[in-house]
Amino acid sequence: MEPSIIMYGLAAALCWGAADFSGGFATKRNKVLIVAIVSQTIGLILLTASAITFSESIPPTTDILWGASAGLAGGMGLLALYYALSIEKMGVVAPVTAVISALVPMSFGMITEGLPPTSKLIGFLFAFIGVWLISRDEDSPKIELQKLKLPFLAGTGFGTFMILIDQVQAEGIYWPLVGARVASISAFIIAAWYMKQLKISGIRYFPLILLAGVLDTGGNVFYVLAAKAGRLDIAAILTSLYPAITILLAWALMKERLKSRQWAGVISVMLAVILIS
Image 1: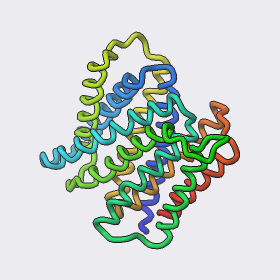
Image 2 (image 1 turned 90 degrees about the vertical axis):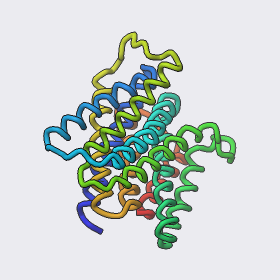
Image 3 (image 1 turned 120 degrees about the vertical axis):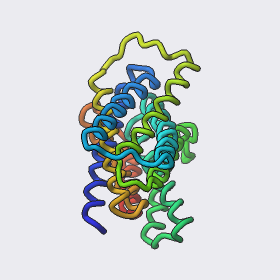
């Protein structure tokens, strides 16, 4: 495996994990749509400035459309994730989202490139065990499906983003991501207008929202670099290690505690991601 894909993939995981913690904490004090719009707008400004600064050529319309499609999918995932983080424990939401976001591009790879090795299939088993341990009720062996809906939707959105953004053929990375941001912000604004949430009465923890926007943008850039450096499925799985960062920050800064079986589930999920990679 190329060292560059490992470096870029882990850098993306670090950025996305910290971004999820920052954005998730901010959504506990602000409307989710407002946090999403502000953080994505910050990313749009950074990406546009980077494209201009590095004199990146504007790619063909097809690549911009692929970027926009990826932005819509990723935007759906981001909203679902922020809603989930605002009402559930970060240590539960993040790992489940990561498993699904890893399985989606992996499934795509299975369709286009054939079955994965046995180690990756074993990883699937660990993933399902981890999801069960994390999400089941304390006194019941049944999975609380209600708690899984948003993380599953978030993971599906992120996984689809990974597939679509990898379809960009141009060498540049910034303009396609600009297209992704324009599409997601437009969708967020339409949703906010429909839900009558466009009015901003004051944003709490703006520095955290700013940080989430910067880190999420960095994660996207590093992911695209990882995908260009090697296989799509490997890049996707490496970046899906981000829950470890989110959980660590939630444990250290918010004193969030998970029960022992949930920690076992988290470990199982992390093992799954490692095996799948």
